[in-house]
Image (tube, rainbow, N blue to C red; front, top):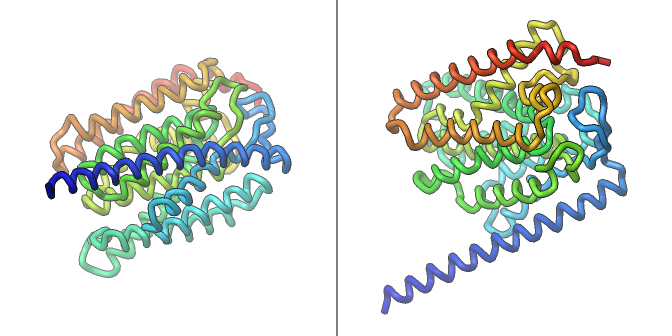
Length: 353
């Protein structure tokens, strides 16, 4: 009889949880539609220019749904990570202001560093072993500084990569799925958090994962920065639990495209703050005329293959992890260089005015 009551209690808990997920999905959809009304009223739009991958006016800031998803999760499932909530709200909030009225890069960077500091603080509070890198205080300070720089850099690369329909949503989903799989094994983060974030990504995809000229909205900086903080927080929690930084491989595809494109632009003596169309995905969508969903699926699929191979195909040892990471990095870098060598001349022929 006792077992029967326990079974019934578990089933009741699961049913309530799934009902909350359903309610969250509906509310996310409603909130996104309400935001569209506000964006239309206040003219929060993205107007195309010669470097854009779209040709019509589109609502900007639809990615605010990721921030709203975090707040809904806290409301329904508990305020488990208050410093992270403050961090993502601060970072996405300043990005939303920047979407409406352009801010100096220095202002955005200062806010991002402060927000990232809050997020790293949350990771430390959630798992005090997160900073067990060396015995001395200086070693821990150096680690935190490096973590801040890497995470803020990764956030901005995530923002740079948000240039065509579907890529931010598709790639983020490809990052969240392996994280959810690992959470079932290691329980490094509240599982409901990852589920609600995936629901937010799916709701946004409904309006954005479309052909060129068909998207209802763009993520905007509020979306790309917001979802970057979300996935970095989850990966940070995984690294804190395992003490293994190779889990950053879940962001390898964006990392390779973003970092190598930055290096390329430095070689060309370009100002990194200026808009451009030199990412591999931009060449695919613009010069090679590939559809936006197809390009997004390619990035999504490559990252999933890399991540799932990392989880299921190699031994769970530091040596195996590092060998896999280095090999995957080399392969992707070679593919990027060969792709650019073959197709970059098409971009050079494109008007730059």
